[in-house]
Length: 205
Image (cartoon, rainbow, N blue to C red):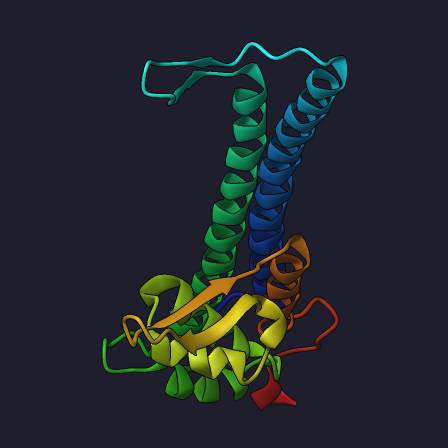
C-alpha cells in the first residue's frame, strides 16, 4: 500500500483535532448557558425578598428555592471543570496515539520523551508539549510529584499551589483550569504534528 501524501496526513490530523475542539466548545457553551440561567434565577429570587426555606425539628434545612438555584449554578461550574479536564486529556491522547502510530513506538515501555523525540524527526513538535504531558499526568494520576512538577512550570494552572498541611502532612492542591488552558492544549497539539503549510515531513526537508 502506498503511503499517504503529506497533505492527506495533515488534513486527517488537523481535522481530527478540530472535531475534538468543536465538541469541547459545544459542551461548554451548553453548560455555561445552564449556569448563567441558574445564577440569574437565583439573583432574581434573592432580590424578590422571598424566602421559602423549610427546616426540620433539628434545625436542618430541608427545602429552599434559593439554595436549590445556587446549587444548580455550582453544579454547572463543577461540570465545566470536569469537561475542561477531560478535553485536555483527550487532546493529549489524540497526539499520543497519532505519534505512536507515526513512529511505530507502540510498546508500553516507549515513554513520552522517546516518542516525542522520534516524532520530532518527522513533524514539528511544540516546545510546550512537555508541559501538556505533565498536566495530563496530573489529571490522570493525581500524584503529588506531578502537581509539584507542574506548579514549577505553570503556576497559573492552580487555584491553590501544592502545599503540606500540618494536620495530616499530606500535600494538597486545587487546579484552576479555564477555557483558555483547554484552547492552549489544542494549539499545542495542533503544532505537534503534520501541518497544512509543510511541504513534507521534517526528515524529508
